[in-house]
Image (cartoon, rainbow, N blue to C red; front, top):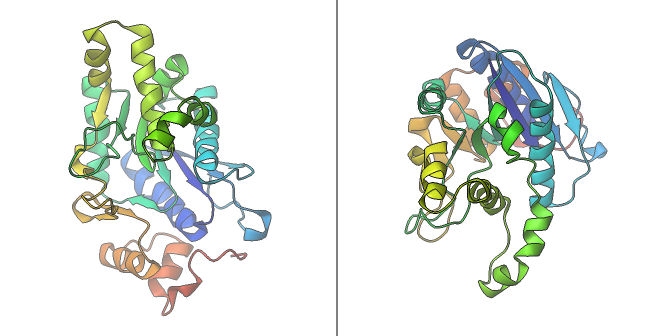
Length: 273
């Protein structure tokens, strides 16, 4: 069994279809799924509980603050509840779909075999993917047993932003949640090891998802789709419609609605389903 945390603001149909993907696709391949949905959309958005095992609702404090709150709340649930047979939690933004189960399986197997505790991609640009620009938070996998003792999450995004405000201003940039996760990960190892052991232990603990890199092109534009990996992030509804049709993923009422719709303009509209 795996845990799956979906977090959302206004990508409501993305979140619903991803729940169908989780409960129908992932559950069959990974011996079941414990599904948590953390949502901070307004009440007027009209979202109602669908197939989540647990729905967490929060107030939205903004883009990065809100995302960090959602991820923290979802992972707090998994870390605080010892669910039998559950070791790894897949975390995805609502609009980030991973449809290739063999690709996911290979990551889980690598983590188990090599005792990796976090799987994520570098958030860097093509020219310098190794630069410290953060870890992907729209798609990562966490060893929840390790998180209970290491406290990588919860992330203190506000504290991170305030602590390094002058540095971000000097570099003419902004603090991101991706950078705050990478900072916390590095800090854990620097707090527990010395000298070369810091990066040796750190690198040994990370399953870097290089298959997805670089996430950003030389001009900074984000690459959205990775068909070979079955990874699709935030494309237009018509694109997702084509993806579902091509893969024949008619696996629930919301995926069916998108597949059969002649006009997907309804998609992700903030009205009651």
